[in-house]
Length: 588
Image (cartoon, rainbow, N blue to C red; front, side, top):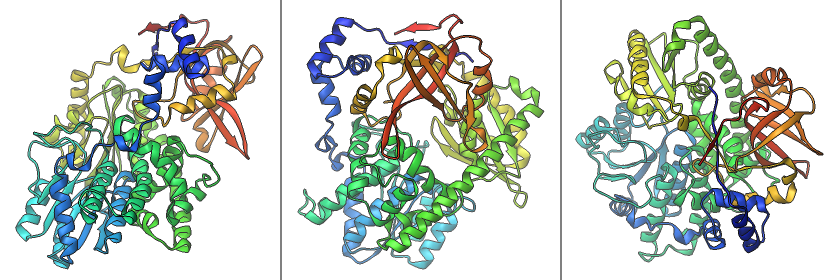
């Protein structure tokens, strides 16, 4: 499907004026204007987001009651069990609250369900187990539980006190718990509703620290903890791909520095195995591609408790051992992922009738349930339609599924419309999980594809690429690209500046690189400027690009590649077209 390039209109006089006012390159000024920041005051205000701009924790719906109850439980000497999720958001949320309560000398432990055996969120057996071990304990969920109506009811019947903190999509009925903490609780109007689980956990820890202090301010020891906890909140925020604006932008902006400056032993070792320990500063991409995959790999392969231990231990030798282990798990995950993706493509090729379906539902007994979510994302991008991957168990006849959206399709709504075929499901608009009996998969496939066909009309806007500026490659140099970092951190809804350049020449044939030849590498020239381009997950483009007889138009982001102490400008290819083809130019 051809993607449209939408160009932001620019006023050359305005660019010159802003460039002069900020004493920055015209390139940065052009990007700022494309983002709606047209004056030096607007630009400086955006960039200098301050921790003081965070909304007070008291305003987060349900937080005051939850914090009061937790502090009272600590003072009463009751055990507090943090019940987390197994992804990065859940692991960092658990670690934040654990560190906070440990500093308060609380009896605190954590429970992370095994992804492979228990699935996502609260489960009835875990509630029974926790009650049997200690009926007086207080259970506090992080990053899960808002849809756990039956589990909360069982806890209530057993007399097990339960507090739920979450950020996921809610059902029509809310669980009956001691307190619910959620930025979107019905009847409330919290100013920023896009916090992830770790953001909610950070706010809860902040509220607890206030109560353990003088009621409004935390003690010096607790303030130092909160400064370091911002780094964990940043990891969860980036990894969960929530919009990197508002409070999320503040948390990530300050968290990136604390990850280096206030690292725990576990974080230090995690930075080492990711090759980031020598960096003078970190980017959101360093979290997304370096730290998060290693934490995620532990959860995906059933070892999430070890990831929490890594982020909470104060033993450097144990931290080094755990970091090496999660690094190896990540390598194993990559290998399994490549194999499943290959099988998924072959499966679609063997069923040509699925090509006409508006969505894909694929299932196999050979697939690992911890990896299918990543593969579903690749399948959705490759076939340009929503995709659900299901790992079937031959023993139980039940499949665990993970889905990813494409072109703004409301995945959660689509799955909900087919709920009659499912054992259970949860998630949000872009990603979701489900459980299904094997004999219901064909029925579900037809129903889900039907819903997507009826309710997902892909428009030009859904697939367009917003281009900040059309430039010549001579405008890119070390100084101008370095300046662009001023706008960071970059992420969901605040992406890196996107540029396009027309009529660039291939210096030599495009090649594949990386494990399984997944990625693309090429060098392009325009005038005297030659730059290396890479494209992650786009190795298939190599043959197509090499077949073009003539120049290319390329759409890309620009960044600095760090290698052995040397920085060089490198382009990340987003899209391309033969320069001889009619340009698809859509103006804002």
